[in-house]
Image 1 (tube, rainbow, N blue to C red):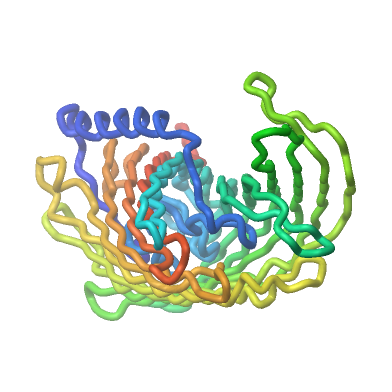
Image 2 (cartoon, rainbow, N blue to C red):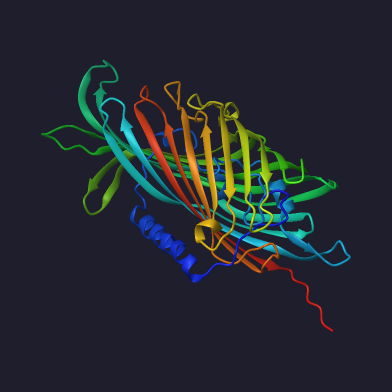
Length: 471
């Protein structure tokens, strides 16, 4: 990472690759088995549950990313890092001889244990979700670019409640009903960015970068109500809202890398985005419906149907952080890094058609984490990188003006699958795993969530732009 000139992975044998292959196969089977069982009640508020904003290496370190640089992955959280993509200069020249291109893809398995604060009942829910796909490459020495797509938020909930139906004039109770609330959707970001590094001295480098992208997605919300009546069958009442979001989005970053001593390096980073407007199109339906075993929900009478154009103001965000590192310089030495980030999100900027949302509030998060690289021996476990992290801070969503406190820890592994050493061997393949566990909410709220997330990522890289010479 950072200013390290060498990243050490010994050549792997078939015996060492087998454990990793078994783990991949198990993850694939498990992911397929739990698909589409997600239920996150709080995702009905705001723009939904925020998905991780960092790659899988950083998630294993608690999400620390602002000052992070690695030749084996893409740090899309801070585009300044694109200026550090690995290159080799031509002999006696400043031109690039070749560079390492990186392909990074990942998926998340998220499990939730929903706990009813009153009855103490537990409701498990699990889901697999696409994490990101990114491609990064150097364009010149000290200049790189990256592009890809990833989710920003996720919406998936299904709730049922018994409600009382009142006469709108007398306010007297006239019946009881079952209400069902369902929602789905989320926002995604397709982006392309560039970063440029300036060597300001023998021991100091400064990099700046910017991402430009397009946010797109939707939020589907539906509520259905059926009266409790044993003698007469009534059609149910149905309300549907579907909002589509789209618009340009930009963020920027800065990194400063310096050598503190013969073996220790410091990286300081800052990245963020200003508040930005997104366009919306909302379709609303109100009417009646019937439901059958074979046809599902079938709309009957339409009471109202409308389509409106509008906008939202997506909030600003800012992150500051650092990483202190001792690089691994050869097979017989260890390497380590430790760092921290502070993130602030200004959700008071959020507006939907110029109207504030009282269920949203400014929030912050502190992240602490590190990585350890053992002496490289023949055993596979000595080839892996080990990561640990902790994070804490309230969610941006509130419920009845009460904040959702959130904190958790993370573990991570970097598992090489191909030869990758300081001579810049042509190909390098690494599996990155991260396990995150967090608590969201407390007993003062109707629902408390215990959440775990298993993230599996593949970082594949190869030497490109190789110039050939012939006699």
